[in-house]
Image 1 (tube, rainbow, N blue to C red):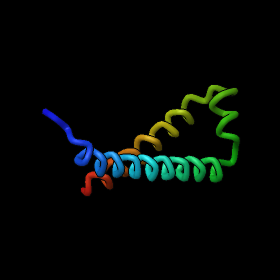
Image 2 (cartoon, helix red, strand yellow):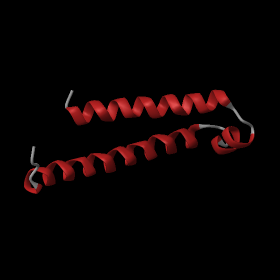
Image 3 (cartoon, rainbow, N blue to C red):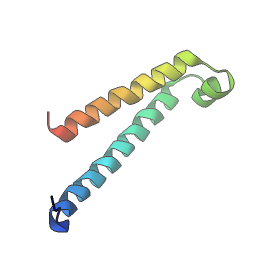
Length: 75
């Protein structure tokens, strides 16, 4: 199977755009969590080894990823 550059370029451009949008949404979601939390998220996870907070942040990342994935697929 031969892939032509003319066929690949629009797909690659769309992928890069969606990656950029996804990273921006991730950054905004994390910034909201940091602003809303009445404590230092970085200190709690890194210094105090707060596993529960790390799990919540991980769940937030997975949730946002699922939303972005559905938006990209058009569902």
